[in-house]
Length: 535
Image (cartoon, rainbow, N blue to C red; front, side, top):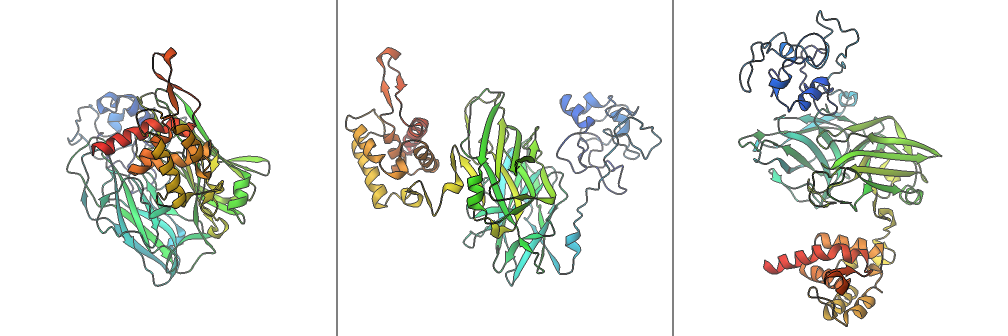
């Protein structure tokens, strides 16, 4: 989109290129420099910025990028392909006077991790075969790779192997369970693979690689992860056909085990309801002291972290409260899903038993016409803080995530507040079957409230998983995310008496104080039920 955009030299490092011309980071991603700001403000059109002097050094952007007459058009060869200078920074290597002007932050974009040069470190390159990129904006692709299982190793670093810089937005390396399916060729996978949940490697635009702290590594091999999954986010905003990609990651691992196994720890909120047309919706989640007392058997040390929301997210912070003091673990007041930032903590940050963490996510939905809910799709939203820590043994639970006032730490032995979740989710379990049959025999999944239904609902709500309030709301929401036909009918029937005809309201139904879970789910479940009937 700009002349010589692929070949602009890095003014700081001889032989390297500044790939992200409009960014502070040579590799792209993250905050933009003044040229990037001007380019965005001028409609991302070269003709509009060519005669500007973004860095204020007395040379136009066209002069610096080899198009002094501003005649270049996309796909053409620029008037000059040598003697280029950066349009976003005053170039101290030339005869220009840069007093008072912004100069380039001189850092190399090459991966530099001293641990990878230690004796005994091995390297495995994991790349997908060159594959056609679909002609749609967003695609998630996955492929699994098997690891050396002859003994235990620590994974200590990952390095990107990028084939097509124009489409790869980010890559996540997940550790998989022993029963994870084998995926021998790239396939579309959405954003979630249930059998591969722990992120042990990450790359996004602008990152040279990921280097773990010298005290820890992710255990792989004989007693660790034996299979990993690479998930790619391909970004093709112009929906162009014919693009190909064969990217991947290289992993560095060693049999000289480090003192600690690394783990992944999550905070955040999963009950997201973001109304349309709002300039600001704030969601907060607490991981209270009672939870860190439950989850942690000892102090853990955070060595890396990043925020995760989708496109409606505009700001996110994670705060640590320890010993009467507050510390920001993450603080992104201008969050962008397209430009994620990872944090490194050196020295590591201690989280102790009795500490608490607060995750705050801010969303903007001015362009939305419908309410946005939690979900894995890009059109849904998330609110997570994700942290790499050690020692893994010191944490009995990988997350401290909330759903309203319910925290994951409250689930003990598969039960919460007397409700055994696995039994409740099993329609054939005697107790669950009895409750569901009672409601379905006396209540309509559609068509209004039967006279005998309220008594049946009152009986059903004696079941600990259906107790009125947040526990019913929580568990019915979880069940309704992947409903079978009986569950769909059951939830709809449970809500059939939540509304009544109000003659003073023109015949439209009015809320009568039914549980929040039922009211929130009725319309969704009835729609799902009708869809199932049609199918």
